[in-house]
Length: 440
Ligand code: URA
Image (cartoon, rainbow, N blue to C red):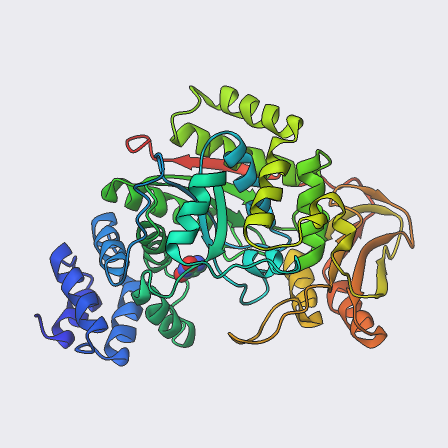
C-alpha cells in the first residue's frame, strides 16, 4: 500500500491516481489503516484538484464494495432506481415509483431521512400511521416481486464508506465537490443493486446546486461516471427556485401525492414526475422515444393504476390503508398563519430555501440524526411564481403547533417573497435532460 502521505501528495499536486490505488485507499480507510484526518486531507485535495471520470468511477466502485450488495437477481431487469439531489416540497418519489410499478417496471427505492432544509421521503411516508420503512433486504425484494414497488430505508450495511466519508465531509467543508458527490450518490445505487438510475438534479435556491451551470456539471459527472461503470444514468434538471407543487411538510406532502395520483397534480409536480418516469421507461427499453414514453406515463396516470400501486405498498408496509381513500385522515398541526402579498402585482419570488428552513424550524425535520420529527407541520403554497396576485392575498399558509411558532415561520419567509409591479415569468419546471447515450 502506498504511504497515505504520498497518496495525498499525489492528488495535492493534481496528478491522476491509478484506479486500483483508489480501491486500496478506500479499503485501507475502512480497515483503520488510513485515519480520518488523512481521508479528510485527501478529500480536500480532491475538492481543489478534481478527479477524472475514471478516477470517480474507481472511487464509486470502491465505496460500493465497502459493504454488502443488495441482490436483485430474482427481479426482472433492468433494476431501476430513482434519486433526487433534494428539494423543498419534493414528493416526486411518492408519485414516480407507483407510476413505474403500474407500468410494469418494478422499483426497489432505498431512501434516507431528511437532513438540512429538505425533507426526506422516509419521514413523509412515516406520517402514515403504522407505515414501516425498516425492512430487511429479503422482505424488500420479495415485496417488489409481489407488487412491483417498495420504498424503504437505506441499510447501513450498504456502502458504509459513504456514511463515514460523508460525516467527515460535513465537518471539513468538503461536501461541495462534484466528484465526491457523484461517488457518494452512485456508490449507494450500485450497492443497492441498480443497473439504471434516473436522477432528479434540482436547481435553484432550495437545492444543493443553486446555479444551472454547476447542476449541469454534476449531471455530466454522474452520467460519465455511470458510463465507466456500465451503469445507465439519465439526469433530469428540475426547478427548485420555488417549492415544488402545493405543499411542504410530511403529512401535507403525502396528502398531495395521493391527490396527484388521483389526477389533480399541480402542473409543476406533474411535469417533473412525467419527465422522470419517461426517462426511466427509455432506460428500461420500454419506449422507443421520449414521445412514446410520455404518452405511456400519461395513460397509466389517467387510469388510476398508480394510485392502486401506492395503496398496495401502504398496506404491504403496515400503513393504514384508509389514508389512500381519505387522505384527510393524515393529521395536520392545528394552528394556521398566512403570509400575504404586500402589494398587488405578479409574484416574482417565493424562495424555496426560506420556505424549507421555516418548515424545518416548525419541526418537520431534524437538526441531528435521531431527533423526533413532527409530521403535521408544514406549508401550503397558495400562489406560484408568475401568478397575478392582489394586495393582501394569501400566498403561503403555515401549519404549526402554536401561534408564536406560526408567526415566526411567516417572518422567516417574508424576506423571500417579492411581488413585482409588472408581469413576472413563471418558472419552467423542467430545465433539461442529460443522458448517457452509450449505456442506455
Ligand atoms: N447526496 C448524497 O447522497 N451525497 C452527497 O455527497 C450529496 C448529496
